Image (tube, rainbow, N blue to C red; front, side):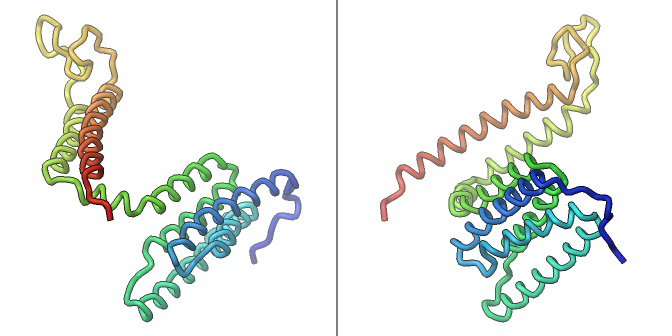
Length: 218
């Protein structure tokens, strides 16, 4: 039988902050789902986030039990959606699980990680149409160039020898051709990938903005 340790302390101030933060995360995500006319709304998301926080404070074993209950609820939700609309609530289900684990993070004291992740989740949910429009505007050659950039910067470049390859000591591929061989291939490849990605993102954004500005008004 699982019991809470009687000697465990629950400081009032810390618990109050965790309750407020976990319920706030659930409320924000739930508001977005409520505006999108989904089955699960504000109250369910807030309670689920608080459930994750409370179980993590009590015992890790309770987290597993609560997660099982969350998964059963999602199975029931998707079965109901299939019978009614012949569709699955995949995004809402994933958000439900994420919110539960964000509550667990709050209970473990990782407030910054939970709050930042919640902001990004809400951004992805709220920008659904913009992201779909952006993905639809991408061209095949742009996708291929992005894949090639990732292969060169992440796979091929770090495998290059981190030493001079000529007898005049002029060419050191990972170090960018400099005189010092103390440069890290990982850091150099990250810099190259970052600069190239910014340039590529700027080109795509500029073309996307031009297409948006010339689109007819409805």
